[in-house]
Length: 440
Ligand code: GLV
Ligand code: MN
Ligand code: MN
Image 1 (cartoon, rainbow, N blue to C red):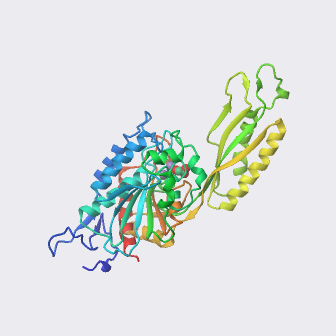
Image 2: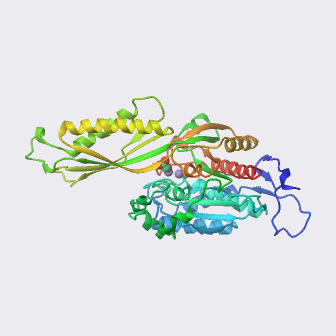
Image 3: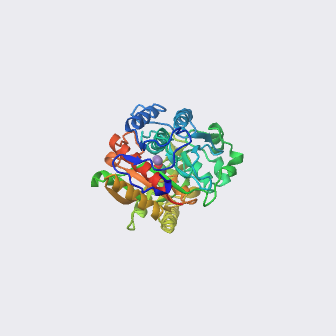
């Protein structure tokens, strides 16, 4: 059968093998082969990966560039090779597993996610999409199905720290960011080297707009909408932009016993007012914008010393970058007033930005269509979490598939998605890759 007769039909759990057969198929004609996700194998692999950096609370602490991250990546590269992918590490530390297609003129279809976690994270964020992507490649190889486009399964480096690996590939990473410190304690440059990359050569890992045919990512929702509404699959419309600042509050360090309450320039007090103010300002207008102070440290940090300095983080997210800027301006204005009230100052240093991204309407339709053909219910939704997909949207058509997160909990050891939802997500991913393969 000519591969161009592909109809996109994905009835049941199977996808008809109507693409060209690989050269390893020795005889013709052969019975039609079908590629099917092996849900057992996929969920076994997810469990196996959760051993790398397992934390006592039942999740993982596998922060980027840690020993656990490196060991988990070695496990994942083995799975890729077993799935017939030519796996390599690029200069940014991303793992890319490629299999050529039958038409050498076509750009690759990329799909994947990440396996690094936040500190004290869960077993599903990133892992579901990464291992499902490998499972798709494995089942295509087993059924000797060859796509027209090359496929590239990607496991991005340091997603949680701020999309570092994917922002290299999209050309968004600034050179100065290589000196930022990751949760592992290593700088980004040290971390890339640790994973087998080469920070001095990251420009060679960059791709240009048009270098990919499409990018797809399966991920857990990380919110509670799909579970609450009993919907199987979320079709992501857009991904929030994320901006982060390091905030330094400077006061006067002094004796906690002898300095009267009305004569203090207490950096901690100003920081406490700052935290409260951020919450109030972000909530002052309607919308889905969010703002968080996620880390706060007082110096010198002793019970009998009025802190002279507090360092904290500020993060603001929204799909509309102008709104994020407006909110930051309001926060900075109020911070000045807080400082004036007790003789302290606040300085903001912008440390990170992920720009918002919309998914591609054609890829959205593909995901919706294949999910319906698989008899799954769908819903369009925004993503309040950041994803490497927003970097890839700079290079070509991007789409994301969400599955339910039980209780809407994520970035926590209590994060959970059911085996059946993971299987459904992987089946939608495979069907979407194959349908995207029929496009030019
Ligand atoms: C990544 O998970 C993020 O949204 O911070
Ligand atoms: Mn993630
Ligand atoms: Mn995450």
